[in-house]
Structure formats: C-alpha cells, structure tokens
Image 1 (cartoon, rainbow, N blue to C red):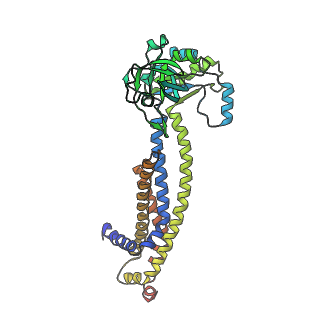
Image 2: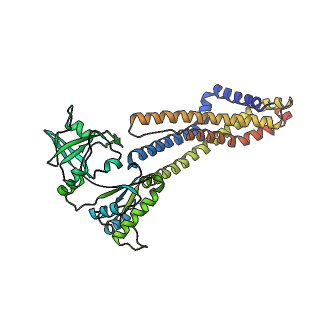
Image 3: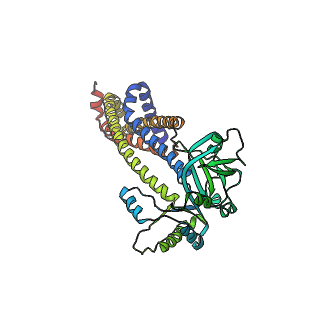
Length: 411
C-alpha cells in the first residue's frame, strides 16, 4: 500500500472523530490552542516592534552613527560613573573629527532642546528645537517637502532661518502656506525657508513637532555650555566598523585616554540600539517559551489521555482489524496519525486565533504587529510533534493488544 493511501484512512478517522465529538475535541485541544495562540501572538508583536524600532527609532540615516557624551547605558550606577567621567562633546571635538576622519563621507553636528513656537495668536509647546549643520540634510531621515534646508551660508552668517515639521505647520498655519512666514521660536523671529516631509509617530508620539535652525545660530542664542552630537556618515556599510574605530581613536586622542581606560564618550549606531532592543525581546521570548512549554505539556497529556480512552473504546475494532490481517505497525500508524492530526488541528486553530488577535491589536492600538510565515510553520510543526510524542504510548498499547482478547472485550 502506498504511503498516501496508508495515511488517508487514519487522517479521515481522526477528522471524523473531531467532527463527531466537537466539545470533547475542543477541550482536548485547549492546551495546544492556547500555547500556539500565545506563541504566535507574542512573536507577531515582537516582529512588528523589531521592524518598527529598526525603521523609526534605530534608523539614524544611511550608514550614520553618532558620537555623544553618553553611550547606551542600562544601569544607574554606570550612568552616574559616566556622568562624572564623560565631559560634554564640544565644537572643538567636532572640528577634530571632521578634519581628522579619512573613512567618513560626511561629518555633521547637531544639538537639541525643547522650547516653544508661536505664530500670531497660536502657540505650540514642547517643540523640538534642533540646531544643525547644513550636511545633516544628506545624512538624516528627515526630508524637505517644500522650500529648502538650512544652508552653509545660513550657518556662517548665523541667519535666523528655520525648517519646520509637518505638525508645526498644521498647528500654527492651518490652511496657509508657511514658506516665507516669520515664526517666533522662544520669542525670537525666524524666517521659514523649508517644510519637512511628514514622518509620523513613534509609540504614539509625534515626530513632526520640530524646528531646525542653523547650529551656529542655535549656539549664539542658547549658549555653548551644552553637549553636542556629532553625526558621522561612513562611505559604506562594509567599512562602518572601521569608520567607528577611526572616530573612536580621534576622540580618545583628544581626551588623552590611556589604552586601558574606557571611552569617556559614546558611539551609538543603529546596530547598538537594535542590540539593546533584542536583549529586551529575548527575555520576553524566553519567558513566553517557558509558558508555552507548560501549556504544550498539559495539552499533550490531555491528548494522551483521550487517545488512551479511544483505545479502550475501540478495543473490539482493533481486534477485528487484527483478525483480518492488520499488522502491529498498521495499528500503531493509525493511532499515531490520529494523535498528530488532533494536535495539528489545535495548532491550526491557534494560528487562526493569533492572526485575529494580531490584526485586532494593530487596528485598535499603536502597537505594530507582523506574523512571520516561519513562525506559523514552526507552531504547526511543534503542535504536530506534541501530538506524535504523546500519542506514542496509546498507539503502542493499541498495537500490542491480543486480537483474541480484543474480540472478547465488551466495553
């Protein structure tokens, strides 16, 4: 008998049993359904957040990394140590990196603070005021939708020019073209020369509530007693690591650090942010796997008990099949396939529920979700494997039944 024909009968019997005993089958599969639903739902949120973080949070521009006062720190004690050790990044640091880099395509500078913006009778608080060099336009993810970006000439002459975000334009200039208008930024007049393309939100927080001004204008107004951020763009992703090393040695030389001393500054790249995020999600994933494993074991034990009951119910049937020539492996295969099909159906229901939950979360909250196809196949494989594993004992018990004794059974 060909394998396809050998499997068709037990698969059909298993599906018929599911249909005939719907409530019992559902209760039997509840553990598998819950575990698969939980696994896929959590993976969908993690995958969606991974893409979201990579696109919206960790995206610093094409092959760009930042030199900052602090690296990424997750420990309070390390932060206090760094606060005592690391001094501000200043203009001289920027000039040293800009003039000393050989592997960089561009080196820019930026600084930020929050302030207010006003036009006429309309006010906007908590605006991200950002002083930038002109080449930040070529390095950053923000793009100008209308007008122009801050220029080198603006920077040299400390011009009172500004590029505004889409939210600032909508809130202060509803229905009006903002280009050429004068906006008050912390009570100082700035001519709007550019309007940025809309970015959107990150975790529900708008990323379009900003005003960019020339960095030397910023430093003239707000002073130089603050740490700056140096943006370095590598010539290509293949030399990103070498470019970071070059910047690190320039900064270490300026700080007169000995070889055994730690950096007194931070170098932050997209990979650093993603590594930190993956550390967090790995902990969540490990916890989820632990919970799912418990549900799967419970579900597997329930399936095994149901299959044992099925063996008892069908003892006479097994005896008849053996008396007409069915071999032990035929009986073994029948019950193993039934157990696997039972568990696989539970996995399929779990995947369907997880897709529905994922869609509902994405539609009703700001949490992004994405269900990877690989996770679906993994869940189905695991659920089917659970059925096979916990079906071995009932199947072997059925296969070992003596046909004479089985025919005498009156259960």
